[in-house]
Length: 255
Image 1 (tube, rainbow, N blue to C red):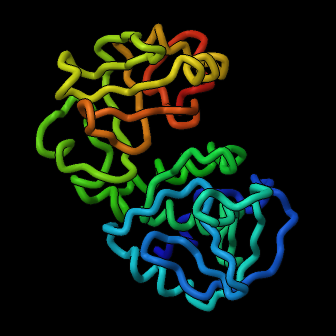
Image 2 (image 1 turned 45 degrees about the horizontal axis):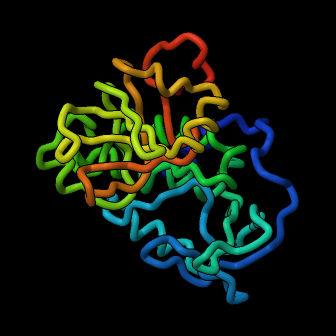
């Protein structure tokens, strides 16, 4: 089934768009290997909420078919990012209102990324990713690319790189030097931990996830892996976390 058809089956056609309806006409010149989108007018756009996985089956073909496509574009931030890219929602008109990001996620060509500009579409894009994961589409059919076990400090985690999704049960919680650590193993130098600044921890707890009460709970996190001081993932937003089991007072954070 084509990715657009998959997405149409997931999302009702009458659903209200999760982005502004203030769009402009644009044309894609090329899509780079990293999924930066070069527009015909010289601007460079990046899909909000989408972390591409170039190793996913079908990734190259998806990029190639977008070359020359006429699209509708909504710029989601007033200024480009630090790389000069416009955070955007882009649609070719062949998919539902989650746009190209939703179509690519439905095909398993990347992972949901919790960009601030993508927050209105978070629930929809996460649901699309989850459906692709359940159906083992694209990257989700590749053991080394799928959801990694946060308790596994072996070959899979050691070889992992780039933007990742990990999940596991939190063993301990610690605080030091202005940071909160959610530890998934007993050894900090070899086992995976989530690190959150106390400022961001306060924001996440205000969003409904009581971080200091998560001992023994299962959590899914997404972000970049840092191996400088053991396998760490720094989290800055509640949007990067999904609680996978019941916790009173945190129901809104569950998937």
